[in-house]
Amino acid sequence: MFFMKKIFSFVLAAIMLFSAVSCATGGGDPTSAPDTVKDPITDPATDPIPESNPAPETTEAIKEDEMLNILFLGNSLMYYNEMPELFAKTATAMGKKVNVKSVTKGSATISDFADESTEVGSKAIPLLKNNKWDYVIIEPSRRISPYENTVKEAELASAKKIRELAKAAGGDVLLYSVWGNNNGTVAEHKAITPTNMPEVATHLMGRKSHTKFMHEVNLEFAAALGGVKVALAGYAFENCIAKYPEFNLYHSDERHPSPIGSYLAAAVIYATVFGENVENIPYAISAAPAKGVLEGIANDTVLGGLVPDLTETEIDKPFNLLIVGSNLMDDYSCASVFTKLVKEADGRTVVSQYVRSSTFVINNLVDEKNDLGLRAALAETDWDAIVIQISRRCTKSATDVEDSELNALRAVMPLLKAETDNIFLFTLNSKSKPGIFTTASGAVGYTDSGKKETYSAADGTAYFKALADKWAAEFGIGVINYGAGYLELSDPQKTEIGYLQACMIYNAVFGKTLPDNLSETNGIAAAKAATLRDIAKKYGTK
Image (cartoon, rainbow, N blue to C red; front, side):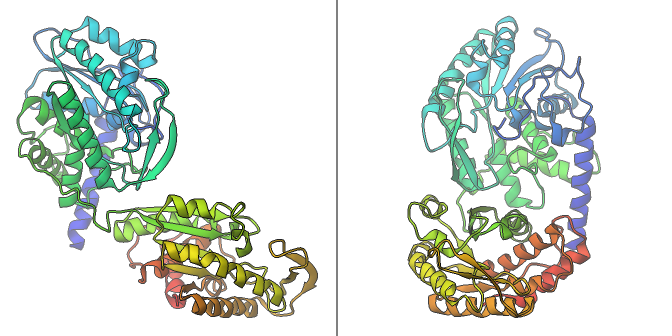
């Protein structure tokens, strides 16, 4: 198994290198997408594809009768890794004569292409009117969501306009059905006008559910357009992930395709257009087993009718983590590190959120009108785990502060318990001879008395642990003893702190330790990361 993983790692690296060198065209998603249209003939890209992803406009001149003429109209989900050119090279390698042209732009919708006053519409509509086309490939945008209908209505109306132009040009449209987001979220957009669709909200949704929704949208569009073909790229992604989870089809943003994801999409379009298997493409790396696997998945999906299982299991659903505390946690990016660790260790997507204040105390949460957004967060999301930081305003001599914080925790605990039983108190490390606070100015606004405790950082940290244990016993919740772990660090960097915090949160919320062979280290040396994981194991949870 280890040997096979090594082979696959080599394969993926080789394919990514090939894609960056040999690809060349363009298109989808509203996130991190370039905002230009580029002609690879007159303005060839020189930067590596995976990060910059320029959006080319054309490939070569149109020839009547002699070739199959195909126009790609899309966004970054189409043009990443120059997928239309991958399709053209695939068809040529399979002995087909094709002319492929593309007009693409990041975040472009079908409605943009149907409106000649837009940048992409001003290019696409003259092409549609003045040339012969066998297929015009369009993509129902992922701005369509289950949460409102204005975007879908606008996109469908625009798709009908594009289809009429395609039919007048001698062909028809083909729908490009894409995959779901792999980060556990879906953006909701609203169509103010057909070409103005701002984002209005973000919702949680697993990848399989999102893929299923987009597939159903494409089937609805296909029926409304008179039964046009659908290229099942989203289904192919799911079939591949189910059978070969070691292949990473996603770009690092978990929305766009990786180079091999784009290769799979191109193979799907080939099988859909020509109705025949794609195989043994000579321009790809001949020794790469991944290439043949992807071609086989495309063939099975399109021609074999292989339908993926899109039932969401518990591991498919996003794991939702709420962190309540101060900048002593979010300054070190522990939530984002936690997300990466869970993804690598368990294959799960994490959605995390902070409820924070730079001077956080639990009493901040009591006031319903000024609770740092806690109640809104609880209402909007079903949280799987909640981590609450104990404030450093608590010290041994500040018994009034300690009592006030405990009473505040008693006040908000029913809200938290209604959400989940997976709740943890997060201890901090103490300063040496910390300041003593009082409740003189009110429960929330604890005041520095100007006096200091006489004990050491180690004694103060032990006090926090004892306090957390006492409170946790009352409420039947857990304790993350981060403070003690921190004391074992020597002049730590922020990346080390964030990594230790994330490891300790992982151990607590999942009740297990991280595997030893992780590649995610938050940018620190592997040996140091291993030491931090050992510290996290040492202090564990209660």
